[in-house]
Length: 623
Ligand code: ADP
Image (cartoon, rainbow, N blue to C red; front, side):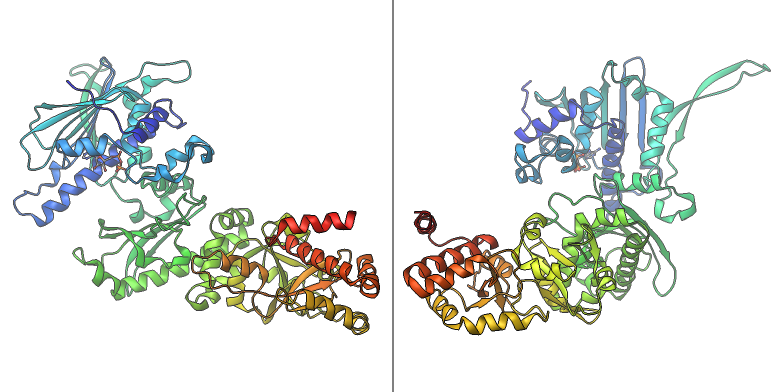
């Protein structure tokens, strides 16, 4: 029989699985049971609408059977089964989402991360098994097939016999090693506890033959063992249970079982509403940013159930974009099973649910911010950018909802602070909320433009995300305090007199310099804000230099330019050199002016038009 090779990505993943990077190998059972449950779902829903399929609740179940002697574990389901082609395409390749392409090997921080990117479900069997055999018969087919693989080197498929529709997966459990006791995966009590732990809410019975003992007939102290088929899981969906019955661990397990994420959720919201609209919902705020979160591939949405029956995997209408990181599910009896996507969008009940959920999420986030700052900061590191996009998009329609959830790094506190905290610390004479933009906190820290504001003792918020300034422009003010860039030409700080005299006295010098740079800057002025640095840019008007950078990097670059003003520190010794050159040597003044201009560009991280000329200019000064 011909052995087929796994597709390259699958092979790599499989090798990782076999070498077992998951610390909890036991989750393989959760994965296989969840696949079985999905397969039963498929046939179950077909039966609801197809009269030719007889519907008998008892005929849907999952069975787990361990054979200690042969060291095998078999998971059988009465689900929809797989055709030969499906076997080939479902189990012969995994990385169908193509998610492997997103990251090259070097970019992967650790291998856990790659696992986190897949529904690796089926393959996790190889964490505990040397060989996996799948025997399956698809609904509507009279042929059955056997798929077999001993790991990374490939798999075989052949025809076989199977009476009923469904799938039977047999694992040949590995021998024990020094680190790992694989025996436990054929131990009844252990299997029972794994099923209870991860799969208690599976909608179909998970059956197992369990050994019980009873008094021997006619005897008073002799016991005999017997086997009895038991249903291990409670089958009541977690969302229908009372919050008080559930532990954090239950919610975490549900999160993992549902593949909402591979992290541990930071927080969960469990809510049951009975009124104009009734529903149960369990929502999660994840801890980590999904790898594709800020890409087009990411789809937001909650699972939507109607009375316990899943009607949609990702109902996007339940979540606003700015909360698109939220995972979870909603179950409502008020929604029709056969509702189409188009109708659902306009469904009033659904809108009400979405509204309520939206408020719940906001209040949960506020709650975290107030009562568990560390967690909130973790959340904000992962998803803060999305909130800022939220402020910016839809022309600021949602800014009132979101502004209190924003945080920025503070020059004073050296950590993230809220706008409210900033305002509450403002000295009485401070008129504006000051911010500085740049690539990183370290770079902003060194910006010459911050000197005056810092000297006044005012706090500065550091903007390092591209969206920051745009979001703030949309916000305009917070609690009636306007935002102001430290690079703005008018800082709103009264320090004028001295500089104004300098400006007047040296008007000809500044005019001369402005003339040299006429096509590059709007003006050359004596700086009020500089203390120790000789030169910097400030900007007139709405567009800052950071915004110019971001806009010019956009595909539809409209060549929007900041109105740059070259500011010279009149108290710096360089200014004396400028004055002297203006008197004696105008060629030198041109040289100095160009040098200072290029220095200001460098400070902003802007490209210098002619770097060779710039270095030659420096040499001229040195010569
Ligand atoms: P995922 O479940 O995340 O799609 P898996 O690797 O676990 O990934 O499974 C791949 C596919 O194989 C499933 O989507 C399903 O179509 C099919 N499959 C797996 N197990 C079963 C089963 N017990 N019955 C029918 N189909 C199955």
